[in-house]
Amino acid sequence: MTRPLLPRLIQAAAHVGALLPLAILAFDYFSGQLGPNPAQTLEQRTGRIAITLLTTTLSVGPLARLFRQPALLRVRRPLGLYTFLYVSLHLFVLVGFDYRFDFPLLIGSYLGKPFIWLGLATGLILAALALTSFDWWKRRLGRWWVRLHRLIYLAAILDLAHFFLAVKGNILSLSGNLTCPLIYTAVILILLILRVPLPSHSQLHTPEH
Amino acid sequence: MSKFSGKPKVIPSSEITPESIYLSRRRFMKTAMLGAAGVTLLAACQAAGLPSSSTPAGLPAGTVAVPTSGLTDELGAPLTSEQDVTHYNNYYEFSLNKEDVSDLAKGFITDPWKVEIGGLVRNPRTYDVSDLLTRFSFEERIYRLRCVEGWAMVIPWQGFQLSKLLDEVEPMTSAKYVHFVTLLDPAKMPGQKSSYFPWPYEEGLRLDEAQHRLTLLATGLYGKPLAPQNGAPIRLVVPWKYGYKSIKSIVKIELLEEQPRTFWNEISPSDYGFYSNVNPEIDYPRFNQTSEIRIGENTRVPTLLFNGYESEVAALYAGMDLRKDF
Image (cartoon, rainbow over all chains, first blue to last red; front, side, top):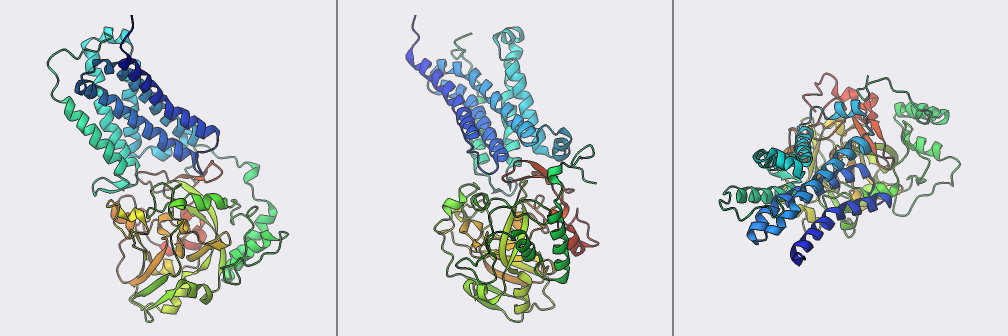
């Protein structure tokens, strides 16, 4: 039996789109094109890719509803897992590439910095979601699985706070390098609002389950 | 004791200063104490054996041509490559992306350029930068530059001590601070169209900091006139403070009684104090100040109090609480 073309195309596009930044990153790394400060470049790029994918993951549900394409929901789990991949890479670049696993130095440097804790909290939530993303966990946790996976909204909010506190600027006075974090805030805010009136009818079940 | 590492650090042999440099460092300290241009001498002795230095076009006589390799600062750190110094720039008037600035600043016209010096001075006046180039004797200074973001460079600047210019305009006894302003021209500096920043860029020093012999007005680096991305035609260099204090493309210098407004302090006072002295003991909410990445080397080294200029500048802050006045 052949499935319709569009969902398959969307699925392929999601995988290619999520892996492409990694390929470009690897290419730039191995060809020495990360610029004069590779550590900072890698930290910023992996961070931006991660929050972009997180936002994309959040947008899958609303887009599926908007275009009446329940098949779209199939890409939600892979996109979430890719988000976790880039978040892990982001952390690895800081700990391994930049600080060469010098944990005393890392702890001394970042213990008092709220943005690091916000980033770690985001990472922990996404790790929990990635680990429980398998069907086995889904069956086992039942209703709790859905509740647990709503934590992605909390992760998004924590990630935004992490972003705002990591850039040079000040959210309170709305000044500094805020363009990027503000754009992500606007998009995530819209997605959160769309989430509030939960659809009562059940035509939106994930098709594969 | 530095908090850099949990256990006592073994110094690799590569970091131990060779005797020749150590000796020239001593010589440097002596000349420094004599008040002469110690760095010029250091550059000269270390350049010995290399082709004789000639004055590059566009720079006044007395400027030393800098060989592109083999030179170090007085602590033995090698110069950052000219390519990196001129292509990795924090200059928000052009771009927020450090690697885009050199391209975007390419057509920036810096000649003619006037610098107005006024406020609480007996001889307020406006200088043509070309005039300044002939008025003061130029020196070569190899300084470390520590960016608040946690990266650092070692740069051979050409310029003259700000104190010489201040002597000429004669600050009044009521003058306590020096205020600096960058050009405001959104047509030429596209970054100034962003409303997220309180343009123009402004900076300030206490008068005694401005008069310190390390405080430089630079017009060149690596033996060439400053490129636009490095703050052409004239910029401040205060090596013991975070890089953002070293304001670029200056059009106005003003002596004041009150502490002036500064750009980053206005944006986020909890991050950026007025003094902004490099200090690994003071934690910034965002950036890590205990260590730094030397551009081009990709290794972390401990950040030094006053960026390693403690013996020369600590006296400026005697009796002050550096945690409060950060």
